[in-house]
Length: 324
Ligand SMILES: Cc1cc2nc3c(=O)[nH]c(=O)nc-3n(C[C@H](O)[C@H](O)[C@H](O)COP(=O)(O)O)c2cc1C
Image 1 (cartoon, protein in one colour):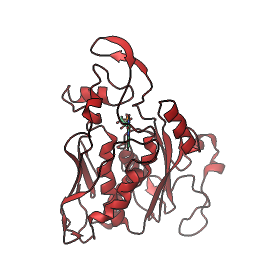
Image 2 (cartoon, rainbow, N blue to C red):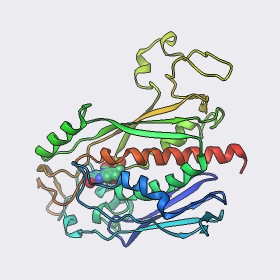
Image 3 (cartoon, rainbow, N blue to C red):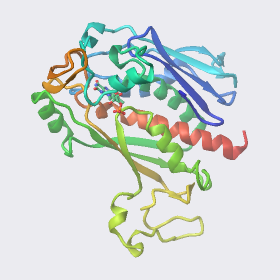
Image 4 (tube, rainbow, N blue to C red):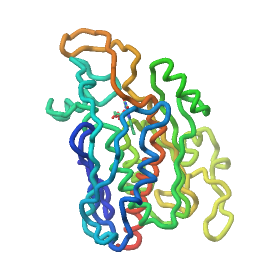
């Protein structure tokens, strides 16, 4: 289903080329000051505009439909919608092809052929806008927790601008690595097994289309280290550690140190370079060219989305810990 969370519960809906997309948030406490202006900064960080991002620029103005009265949350479900008003659907007549790497084939299977394929339909990066909106509210609940994500690498290079330019020149696409930290998270969030902090963050993170891997702390390199090298020794009675190889989580529970993790996003599937793939109408391998407006490197737009899903995960833990 398209809902997630226990006390801070979100549902997203809509299609890339439908009339609107949106989010319904259940469980947000009452009395939080909230206006349309609060969304401006985070939404602007997700909006295309940089070199290497799509030319499809929407107004992305949030329409708060319920759950807010006289500028404060009421504690009832909050519904926020966004219009889609910059659509060119002709680009999505692929005439027997499914874009290799994209979700066109699986979307068709899932809906028994009744899926909306335009702009990727419900399987579109556009659906991350409602996630960002929910993240704005989650960040407000968390108050003192500071969450920051940044793109640290694209196309295997630290020189992101150059990597993007090269991909554009080649009619190709690149992915990227986003690093996220959450500071001031209390020790004690999470459960030992199924609702560990890692599980819940990962569950939400994989709602960001294109994510292929996630590591907490020095998770990947840890396989090459010895216990004596990887262990984070304690340096005070609060549980502060000298290093943070565990990424602020032990046994699924936050340990009070900075929560940190990296996310690995694959290259966009829609590339202008010709690809040889199967045509399901002619039943033949054929040359396929994708037109239209696509992100060469959507990872440029992703950090604020990563912050949003982190805030949503932590807001849920926060409310559970407070027994709200
Ligand atoms: C903000 C954002 C924008 C994206 N833009 C594109 C795009 O323009 N073209 C494309 O092929 N994929 C794009 N993607 C990735 C696809 O949405 C994703 O690869 C696709 O839905 C299939 O999902 P999967 O890669 O997780 O299997 C974007 C992802 C995000 C998060």
